[in-house]
Length: 376
View 1 (cartoon, one colour):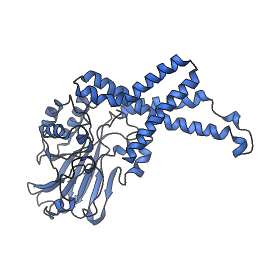
View 2 (tube, one colour):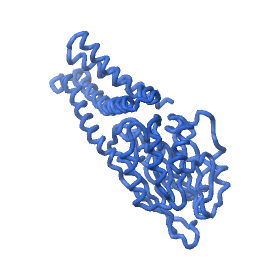
View 3 (cartoon, one colour):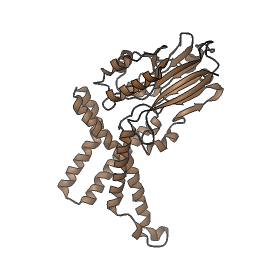
């Protein structure tokens, strides 16, 4: 909650800064200030209006609000910190006699450049990031284990995480994911949460595309926080129509070759825990078979290491956008990639295949993960 309040506060301050800075630079009078303020207010509120128009059935309007609002958010995320750095630089230079004992005002940046230089940099980064978000990469991981049955050389697992199907991520992105999975010919397909975005209206037809994906050992999914945001009942219906078995606080053994356990995203569950303790779920599974734990957030329960071999997670997006990706290591203990844990367990955190909010990624390309569990 504190993190959410921080981002909301920063977003509000960024919009206010933009308004007052434009008013100061343009000096166009009260009428122009009102028009500028109304425009910025509309852009600021566009992400909030997406759900309103989506639930009313107006898909085109909702998508327009989605792109307008989310791109504005992405623009401010990069612009505001850069502008503040220049403002701080000016503050020091204009008071050089206090800090350094001499006049440094000649090397201060003009108010025009403190606004438009960060704005141009942000625009360029967002244009690049818009295309980086479409550059889906296949990450390959090999995990060695002694727990595969005799005669079985390997199990290939395709992990989809944080695809965020909704107003922005739609048919084209999904079809690319499907093509890459089909090319890998996995034995098992798993979704580690946020298959859907918070707003899930108008995407029901995409379940038919996913339903065509087949794997020898089946398809399994867990619930992420955005499935809760978008309405749990609708989300479950979509995921099951896509051919996934949803693991909500339970584990199963598939054809005697692999254990799979899955838990809901606890922070997203507004109705209390749907399942018992994670340790209890895992301890009921045969310990001589490779155990896969599906969990949306890359959090490790203290009693779980040693009871699973590999936990697959997502949620972090590796920060998704600069400078948030610089903060990701401080927000999440495990924020990306493969991590060895205690007692022979391991964790893999996917960067995610889609985007949350702005359809932009910078220094954090989307990924589809192909894991090969081999004898060793």
